[in-house]
Length: 339
Image (cartoon, rainbow, N blue to C red):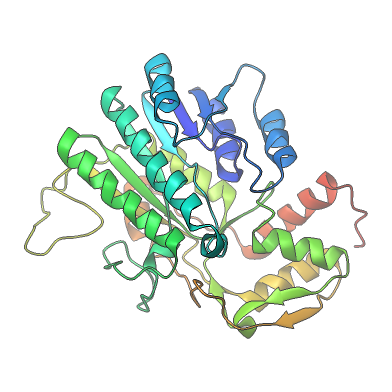
């Protein structure tokens, strides 16, 4: 039985993933500092619901080098899945140092732990935000990503670069996953679906950025988890056709690979709001606002590489995913469904 270390165990994706991998027979352990960026109670409830009392979670910070390396030394994981990060584009405008501390300093500790503990495969979360100013759609992992629009995106790109150096120097197989707007039950309170649902249920106005002219490749959490679980046993391999004369950013002569995980089907923001309205049975009061600094107008994932590798791509329809989230929200917060 392989042992898998998940950082961000109490997080939205981490908790769902831990449950899935445990059901598949893996031994799962975690690192999560349970910080108060959003509700600690929500994080703790995820652990209580998704994981049994035998799960070991180390309540430490990724940037604390000695603590992190001690976990690797004690547990000796076979596979590491790094999902812990300071998330959020807008928050990075106000708290830049937090992103460097968690996403850069913390990530090098993960890389060092993998290096010294002979980890067989490192999977880590990147983000669709790395595409930044790119306008060619759909976004491809073979595209250049040299123009990020937020510090959050820049830290995620730095993770990809750092991972490559460890793949090159230490033959560490690394797989980077660019997530596209993940949503679903137990989601983060700072994400649009949570904020919109809460406001509509309470007859409060919602802020609709870029006057509603946003498109997002919303990706349901179960699809994200399915893709990751399939990739666990597929460590990155060197690409024999890779050439430094015409370098493919998504692969390497080293054991390094980047994938998009998105629904490959962008949805207009107003259609997303309508899906919530349909489920809740109320019409949202809308404040139409300008595009916010750091945001991009559209995301759209090319997932051809992912499908070719694991014979799977996300396909959950937006109304189905939203319905599942709203059902969870109404139950978790004990809200009377008006529908």
